[in-house]
Length: 70
Image 1 (cartoon, rainbow, N blue to C red):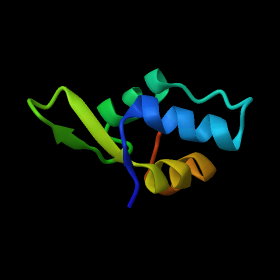
Image 2 (tube, helix red, strand yellow; image 1 turned 180 degrees about the vertical axis):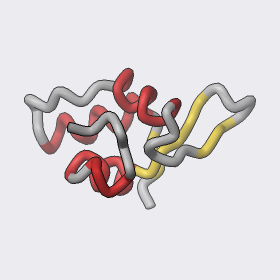
Image 3 (cartoon, one colour; image 1 turned 120 degrees about the horizontal axis):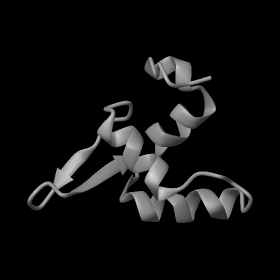
Image 4 (cartoon, rainbow, N blue to C red; image 1 turned 90 degrees about the horizontal axis):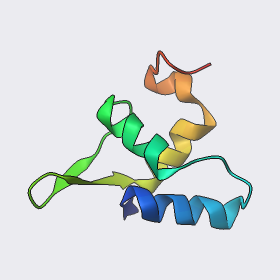
């Protein structure tokens, strides 16, 4: 399990694919829509996500029941 904040997850994705269009805002939107699970930290304003789950979601959004996936 690789727990990261949205900004840190974007940095790791950019290391793998420098031209990736994934942004922290997109990740936060997925968290807010409860498409990917998150863990609240502190007073709950910041959320940790499992980077492996995010990568799995990005490879096939339909597996997660994302009605916004195309």
